[in-house]
Length: 226
Image (cartoon, helix red, strand yellow):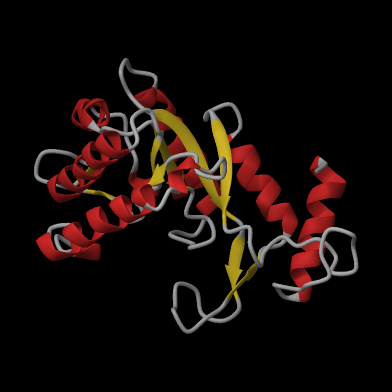
């Protein structure tokens, strides 16, 4: 996993830096739609020789390098990561120390329910975020968010030939309940093509998802409001 997403490849890292500079030089970061930086190479929790669930050193270096670049280009802009490996999360001293050295404002952990990492993923999510809540309660750690997975698989799970489709809404409610009271914010991967206004609405006459995406929108607005 050391080379995952090329985080140790100088050429790919230089390309990332060039993209950031292009966005700034082109004036795109001056738009109100620009809020901050998402470092899209997904850091992950894994077992190491010194920690039961920590980020690898290569990802720590990657994230902090990207953070340094973002601060020099757009001082004050928030920095955001969304790791996986959440099901093995702990509040170990080694992991807390990593969080304190992680130069980001927000860590939005994937709840891994859509990816079905084990037989009882919602229960595992609750246990993981309970541990993360304890870890992020320590001083000088980033804000803790949950990134709940709103999808399920059209075919085989965790297979790139299988399309992502909207999950049954009761499952999403269970995911929300699992992280309730433990995180500062809940976001969702993914919204586009999973939740959609009815195409005949005043908001849009374009369909960008399967029919179930309209059902998902109706369930969401009917249960939780807009």
